[in-house]
Length: 262
Image (cartoon, rainbow, N blue to C red):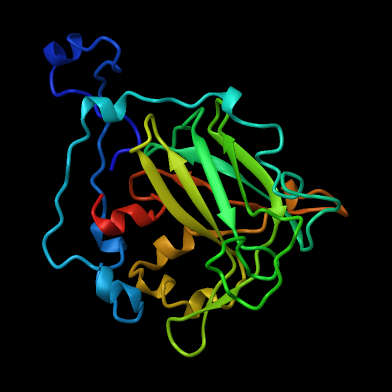
């Protein structure tokens, strides 16, 4: 799945669609399938029933899929990127206050400006605000756990939140998910959406997580781990972590969509 519109194969075809980007000489990088987890991974129990049994198909985006709708700043609220305040009723949510920031970059490390980035997470106790989450940890009445932001002209985004807690899940008897934040990145249309997860530097649960361990490439795992960025922290207030999202190429962020053949 391409996050950017793919040019038509020749100039004549491009001329018939003047609203599409002109053809240029941008180098195209094939995906490195060796770094992606196998669809069937018995250690990750739900993959047994969900994994495809036949060869995956690559589908070309249609014209309607790559030309809209687009996202503008008028759709973003003032508190959308502040998870500490955008749901609070009478006080700030409980937990370690953090800033997450970074850039969205293409395969040549050029910034992807005006890109919609969504994020959602569990609260500091490891529980999501969702009716199907029955973990015994408490729900924080002042924390919704979701937000969004648009990257600026340099592909830069940031948001403020509380550090999510780990939580148990029914994989095996004592399986725990490391603390993580989910990310969604939109391209030029709704069907161009990439989804991934960010983990935190130094979390010992990363090494024993059955989902993380389906990834065969250690460097791909490391690109999902956000390092502490003390220089971006707010003294006596908030720690910061940096998470760059690379859309393609050798330094690509691992996206969950690709595991399903999109």
